[in-house]
Image (cartoon, rainbow, N blue to C red; front, side):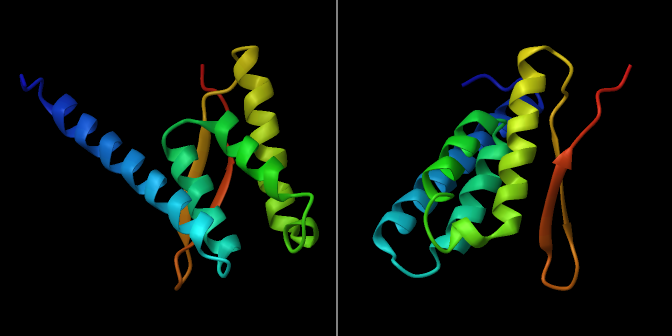
Length: 116
C-alpha cells in the first residue's frame, strides 16, 4: 500500500470507525439492556462517518417504541438529522457539528452553517 501522507492514516481511521459501528450494532442486537446508550453511540459513529441518512434510519426504527418515544433528546436528534438530510439534497449544508462537553463528556450535536 502506498503512503499518501495522512491518507493512509485516514483510511485506517475510517476502517476503525466502521468496525466500531459494526461492533456497536452487534452488541445492540444481543443486549436487551442499555439499548438507548448503544443507539446513541451508533448514531454518533454514523454522524462521524458522514452517514446522516443511515443515522436517521436507525432512529426511525426506534422512535415509535418505548422508551424512545418519550425521549425528547432522540426526537431532537431526528430533527437535526432530517434538517441535515434535506439541506444536503439542495447543497446548502456542510455537515453536523459534534462536541463533547461536561465532566462525563456528554455529546451534543447540531447543524453547522455553510461558510462562504
